[in-house]
Amino acid sequence: MPRELSAYHRQIAANNRAAILKAATGLFLELGYDRTSLARVAGNAGVSKATLFKQFPTKAELFEASVLAAGDTPDSEPLEPPPGSFHAGLVGLGMAYAELLSRPRMADLIRAVIAESTRFPELRQRTFDFGTLPVLRALRNFLQAANTQGTANVNDLDVAAAQFLGMIATVVFWPRLVHGNWSLTDGETLHTVDEAARTIVARYATRVS
Image (cartoon, rainbow, N blue to C red; front, top):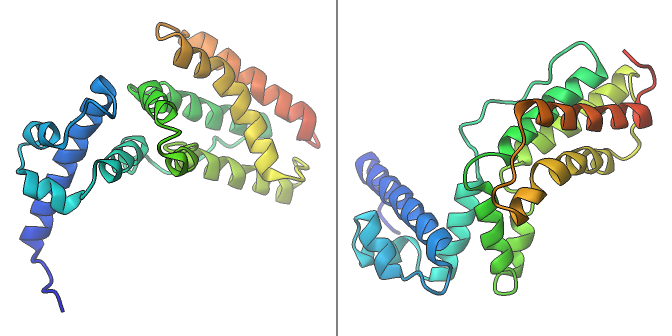
């Protein structure tokens, strides 16, 4: 039976893992998968190759872990839509989603996944919603609550959530994926989210408030 690591050694392992993932993410985004070597990742992370291999035996595993870790947002606060109306709640959640899509490297990470999608088909599926899951969960809960309160009648929560977030991503994110210099002002982003919210209200609200 393997001996359990002490708290000190667990912290060292966690620090090494974080350093490796940070170095790997930068190199994968800068050089691509094929041109990124594990030796260079170890050097940039300040760890030995043995330490790297202990955490990530293959480059494929390291790539998967890097993408998933970079898209994760464990430090984010639980999303609570503003009270008041179905429309206001949608706008609050929509703006949180737009902010997430506008974070540095989000477009670069998606490009990396697309570029390697034939090599890592399962990764593409696992990362389709990476980083956006807190918003998706909060939106689904919000729509369910609206059903319960009688302010909306949403038969399929997943379809409605996809419709709302899709309208936002089409303007806020996908053009930036193709055109790196694409950007919106705060006012344009708010207008986009507000229009998407109005569309959802028109389709699903049982009473306008």
